[in-house]
Image: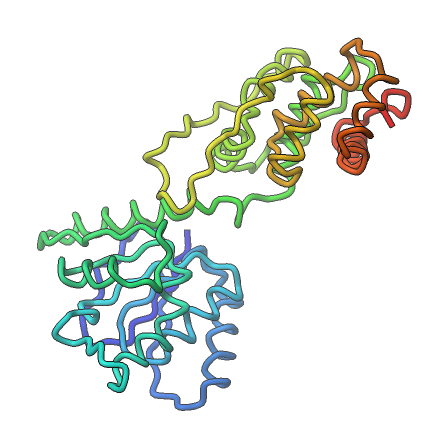
Length: 328
């Protein structure tokens, strides 16, 4: 795990965990916004951090770093370092601090996954501010002097941030592994495909993906069907993540009638369907005995023709649905 730290205050950084690769982005007095932005982007490209952690408040440089992290698709953690205090913040619109708050901290507040508050008053200011996302996690930093406690605290935050945003880092091969195992579970023996080689795959990311796609049981069925060992995946629990990134599995279709399944798919949105949904649609199209002419009539009657054609195309791509089993 790599963490890029940017500190624009005179305060002392939270002790950095020795369990991660810590990269320091030096503070600067540069007055050229474009040059500074390019420098930050170059540094992010060079080090490729998993997380960008920003410390400080009331300086335009932190807004630029936050924007660069957003553009580069990096998870953002923010520590104001007691900069957001009622004694410091002046809410009168004609006062300079208010406009700094709106301008410099917009990208921080809107895109940070975790805000680490060092003071209860600072926490209260953020919680009453309408600029922040309601789902963002606000955590008080441990007040203990023990550096080991603070290091463990930060390491836990970074781990949870990566667990929440694992889809930023999951590889195509890891996604392919999950899909292949599900294919093995739903296809005929003659149509089976070989799953990808599992060397160097992250079982933790695979576990999160399988959990969110509601596909773990199907993966296990695919492994049994091929009589092959499946890597032991860690159990995914809610306390591994922060609320902003929780993805609740939607479960399968309650009604197993083809037209109602298609109607439910349209309501959920095809982009939101899990692998379990797609596998159930495949089984319905491929194996269940139903009146296809009547189904086609009902599909056109309810205005589901376009949705059904999209489902057929995706099932053909995902599970090799044969043309003879298309309803339309």
